[in-house]
Amino acid sequence: MKKIIKDIIKFIAENITGIMAIICGIWCFFSYKDVSEKELLAYIISILVLIASSMFIERFLKISSIEKRFKTLESSLTVKDIFMYCHAVKFWDYSEKYAKKIFISGGSLYHVIAERTGVFEHLLNMGCEIEIVLVKPYSDAARLLCNEVVKEIRSTDKFSEHTIECIGLLYQYKERFPNAKISIRLNDHVPPYGIFAVYESVKNDVKPRIIQVNIFSGKVAYDKRLALWFENSSEHTQIAYDYFCDRIAELRRRLNVLSEGQLREIVHPNEDHNKNFSSDSPLKGTQQG
Image (tube, rainbow, N blue to C red):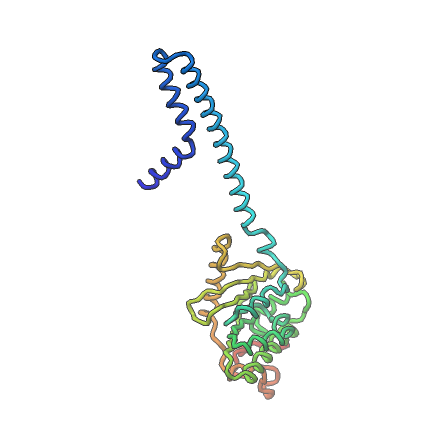
């Protein structure tokens, strides 16, 4: 009911001159016998003025409506706001400014971890929590990812060695920053994309400020892969943002965080097992070479 009343008031306000012209026209039609020709001419001129005013007001309102739509389009996201190359530094700029916690999932993440040691050290010095999900070395997922996605490395062994090297760097961070919270998970499924998220709070119920999604397209060089960018504050990409928040939650539920002992077993495997991992290793069931 309130909406109907509001619409009626809006209609009257926008068409007041036209309504007045109609009222005057009706009055003149029924009263022209009782007024002089001079007065009738004055009424007719007044009606014409009201009609002209109504036309100008209607045109003004249409122009205002068009301008408003253009402003809305200008404020909307463009393709450049969503798409970028995955090696862009935008994620790391946000991390240094806002991160209380970061979440990163991908393949070996060699380009991320091994090539940005200074960034990780800076984040850890800031007290930032770090969550990492890598593809399980020497697994079927690693082989498929290496064969179908990774362009720079053709050997599954080399790909897996890079993964273990990154785990080793993270393990060193845990030793150098004893108060830091670094959690590492291994994924035995082939990921269709990498997810990078920046959190402004370490509370479990808080959603990330931004999410960057690196697309794993077939045999495209790392610096040429496309990435998608989503912000929590943007209503234009809310559906996609919520979808990838759910994917982060799914990875956390499905994959266990590696213990200190499991990390040591990966970084310093028992050499007596001759390239095979021990029964205590999270890599049990996989084999090098």
